[in-house]
Image (cartoon, rainbow, N blue to C red; front, top):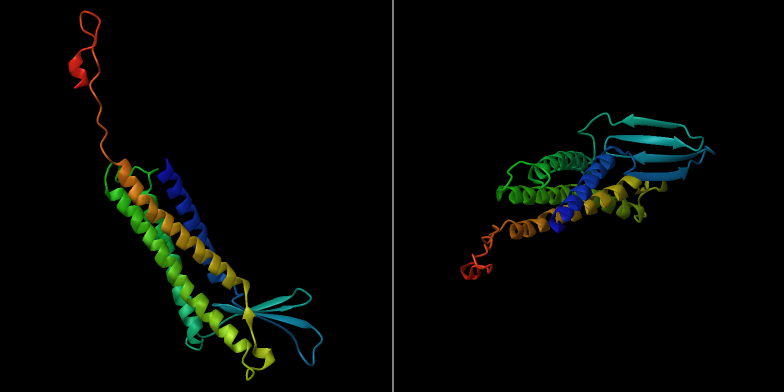
Length: 215
């Protein structure tokens, strides 16, 4: 029962992390800039993501524009697109693999292959977390470096957006869920030992139990 509970917990955390990766990939709030133009009194907030950039006015109006050219993007945005999409696909594969090897399913029932499949699913989720962690740290490093660079104009300075924090939380869930799935495998091996049943004791004609049953 303990291994089943850990398996369900690991799978739940991994699914939440996978959903967080998809959410972080689609949100445009990877880099956020809030400033007031010199000639305009209206405050603006600029959001820059992997797929589009948005301008939000203080009145609540928002205009978004999808990037025109992929080749014109900076290297970190190109790598961020590729790695987050790849992490989403890998997370889906990990979900399918883990469900096949879960104890609640009948696939590979009574076979050692079942725990190997769950182990593979946990490793896949760990790889998924590492894949999405690379663009998150890369873009965060650029944002921090340019923010403290005196040569960068104030209007071009950026801050870390909500998508980065969602991505880091998703990475933590993926790594924790994958580790829990890997930990359940040895516990399953202990439960897979064959159970031997002793022969029932039969009373003799004088009412006593046969002594050979105790040997």
